[in-house]
Amino acid sequence: MSEFKKITIAIDGYSSCGKSTMAKALAKELGYIFIDSGAMYRGVTLYCMRHNLFNSRGNPIHEQVIKALTFISINFEFNALKGTSDLILNAENVENEIRMPDVASKVSAIASIKEVREKLVEEQRKLGANGGIVMDGRDIGSVVFPNAELKLFVTAKPEIRAQRRYAELVSKNIETSYEEVLKNLIERDHLDSTRSESPLIKTSDAIEIDTSELTPQTQLAIAAQFAYNNLIC
Image (cartoon, rainbow, N blue to C red; front, side, top):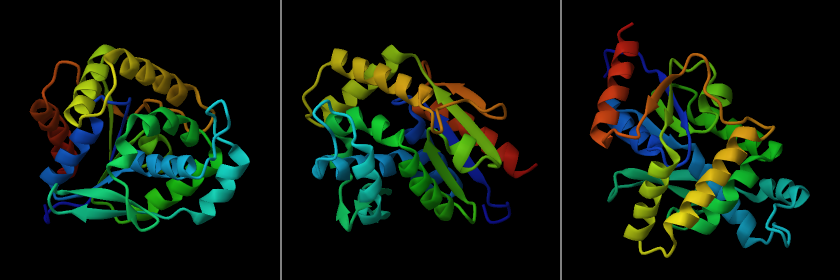
């Protein structure tokens, strides 16, 4: 890819629609760096859970979360066995722990806090300052990189997304039910789309890809074609 300019690719979309799988594969195809912004919010959420920064109703205690941000350090470390990067929270590899259902159920509430988003958006912009990255999340094309050369918006039917997520959890021997996964997914969709700070939206210049009936290979082929078209423009 050395003969082409290095661009920034922003991939936004709903939970479990395949955007991370697409982003990782696209980054590998292009020889770019993949950045999982959602993992960063999960890392903050895990820290808050460990330090009891949620009230009795399960909602984050905003003032305490904001104060805790000073003590939270988030980085990525390449995992040679998986060929992807793991999240490092305060020098600890927490990649597996941040994928657990209890973290997933709380991450949208943490992500809705303005100061949390400001801190992580600043970090994300530093990571992508020189281009040559693929970043996925909820507000990458709308807030983090509004001038990204290529923006993709990924979606899929809720029932299909829930089934995919359920199958993933079962494969990891995590006990849950399809109904519980679907309920959590619908709740996250609502929170992500209606929060006052950087809600999940499809920007006018984003290309929508519905993955409901697409295999991962087909998803990659479609995304890669858009990327190559952009690179030679």
